[in-house]
Length: 462
Length: 117
Image (cartoon, rainbow over all chains, first blue to last red; front, side, top):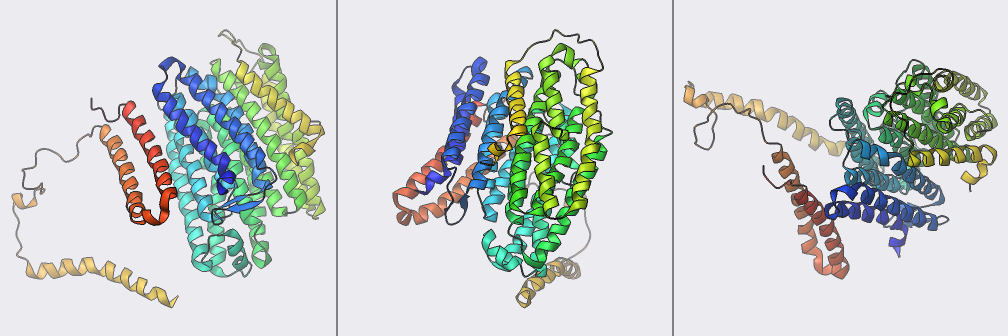
């Protein structure tokens, strides 16, 4: 039965409908609990369904759906990050009295799109998935309706995102026009000839994807969109939708071969090095935590694109470790940011002042995450970077490895400012400090993931 | 590429059609105008005030609902034609689709989109 292969996505769709329906019948006071409870339930079933398909490699629905271990790994990744995001946003939604059912339903809608994106080698299905992610993302970015920054973020993201979607579709139309097929495998046969139309189509398609990834030179929208969006949604943008786009880009790039491959790989290398360097350099001057994390995520996308440039099995293995650890550390930091924000401390780097004193757990965890993002042993970030360096040295790209190391050094400066603020500077915390069990749970899970990966990265490669 | 010449022809014809007809009309029509002639045509009713007025935002929500039902109809027509071939599976599939749309409608109803304040 084909529908068995689609079970994770069906679960998400049913969950979304259930959340919307439940919101209409439940009393106002318990709406948040209901929405988030159903969201947790949906994602748990989604995780189990995705895990059950773990080792399957199969095409279904006339080639529209492809279930393979590479996609299934990312479905599991989405399930786990989705659960953590729900924990992350529970108190946030309550504190700002946002509409809970809409919030959870839109978030799950984005996950549905992401799940479709990673399980397709057919451009139209992939595009529908991508658009589902994009449309829900625009709405989520503008979810703080009273906040002008959030509205600005949503509008900017919407307009620029639509341009990217148009570029992508334009590219797809070129590819379809030339090859008469939307299947990546069929298109790939024609790709190797390097015909002008195919080169233009591929480049337009990749430009659209790189735009959604916020890779340099398509990154200008990202800091504004990520700064204005609600904090949990900023976390989602940096670890959720981007990873799904990355997987789609990887599926596309891995089909390149021949003359065209060299040319496109060369552009990819430029984009990767540009993203790393520009992201890290601009991050040096940021004072707003969300903007800082936005530029940091641009830099990390650069590292991840290096894996595609190399294209070896070792590089892909490194990518898994890197993505897993990066997501854990990022979610952890965003949990801490959400907590300081909930204490009316704002979202500047200075709002971390005295964090190590008033909330030692978060202070220490911040240290772990920062070490991981910089790449200092024994954290998982070190392992991710090490594997990536080894993969690039193996392919005799020594200069690339040196550039990556230098960029790592550069990133120490701005990540260190967070730690300095938390431990070596102090300020009064006027409001009474409240604990938040959900955020503490997220931080603890993230710390465990980062530390375990530091000594045993193999669990992310199984 | 040769097959695209037709497309090129239609683009050129489309671009030229408007200036050509306007100029041609100029040759034949009587000229001269009055205040009444320059007024907006509103189905024979005398226009009152400016055309740029504020709309109630509910118009947009209602329009959105209308579009949803429109799209639903777009899917329903080809389905109805092919229903015999699709069999029970097609019937069930369409009811799933209609169910999802009904959930959306009920949601909008309960959130007082249809209610006019």
